[in-house]
Image (tube, rainbow, N blue to C red; front, side, top):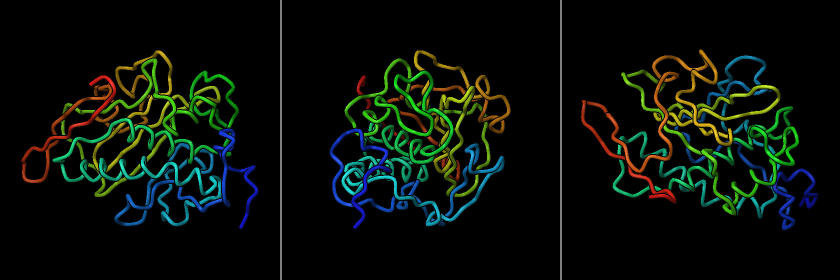
Length: 243
């Protein structure tokens, strides 16, 4: 068993244990067709990559820290399954979903040449800052207008069936946010402290196809309605600290 924890991105918590685990960059349980669409990272070489989920594995978390994030993985599966189904009978845990967004953003950015978050204290390129680390593990909650903004387009749009996609928005060597496409529901994870943009297009014109890029951003919504196949309508409800 490899007990060298120098590559664990959570090692500054000073409680690494057991060997290094083979972690999926995105939680494997989320995928039906075992592929994911990723673009905007330096390893994508300037194009969208459609890759098999099993190829997106790296040893960058120890077993303890990987297991400590399992509650966020479970909550994300419940939420993303609800997005695809067009509704849920259960109140979804928004903060655990947000923690999964942060964890996934870190997973995809570790080892790169960009700061994860804009203007974060004690930040190093390709490594989570102490604040981002605390958020991922539930010790802190994103504040100062940072966190999950849900995109609600004014008109209908087409998306690939069962699509999972992630795109970072970066400038001057700092990633200010990530756009997640989660089976038809788009979420902007904002890492711009104190800044609430009206749309993704204002930050990165042309990054997303219309009408998604121009969609209004809603911060941590308590509930919203979803159009599903056949014209019926479902409802998603989420629990946040302020609700």
